Image (cartoon, rainbow, N blue to C red; front, side, top):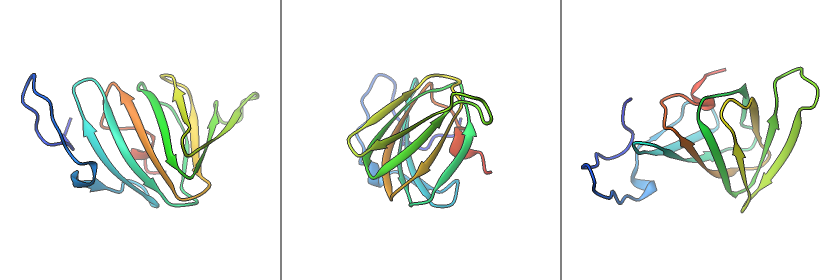
Length: 129
């Protein structure tokens, strides 16, 4: 997997400033910086109001911590009964289990930290839709 983080020596801590990590924009209205470890990764993401990611799922367990703004999550497969909608505001978080179908929409400009375990190159925002 290509690294988006500075190289870390085995068994040594790595100290970085998130703002100093390289940024990418895999989708419109989104900018992301990632710190990737051996067993987890964190994505520091800025979303513009109106950003949407279609329903998707992935092997990774995901925790999204909304630092500012409001991020709406829709849980469950498209067209299936019982879909749930949750709006997570600044200071809130949501834990998404592995393989749970979910979609997201930024109701405001949003700053969110996404934690993924295990790390992977592809998540829902890496799938251009």
